[in-house]
Length: 118
Figure 1: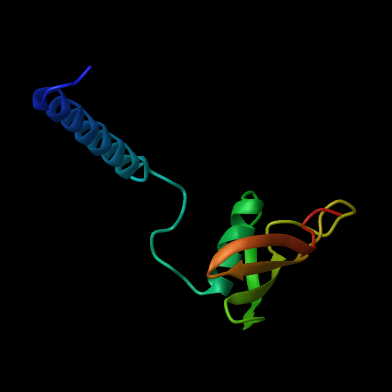
Figure 2: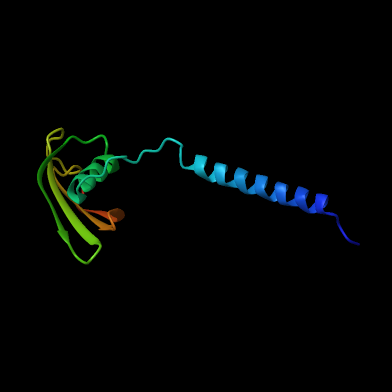
């Protein structure tokens, strides 16, 4: 069975419409609100932000924040802080520290090196 040029044109138009809808949908998928900062910061600043987000009820006073390159595209940031909002106790540490590892300025590892909770 042979199809006419009108049928091929209709199929091509449908394919183009489908591609345009898919492209528009994918473009709009990235337009939603997110909790990621739009403005880039230094790795140390990003680590401070991550530390504060990881333990939002604490009031950290940053005492030291450093960042060093560990490879061509890798950076390690170390942040040290004290907690001014809590008295020393058996449960809460007043001195805290965190380490962040970035690859191409994307956070790939975060961990407490001095936990806010004992």
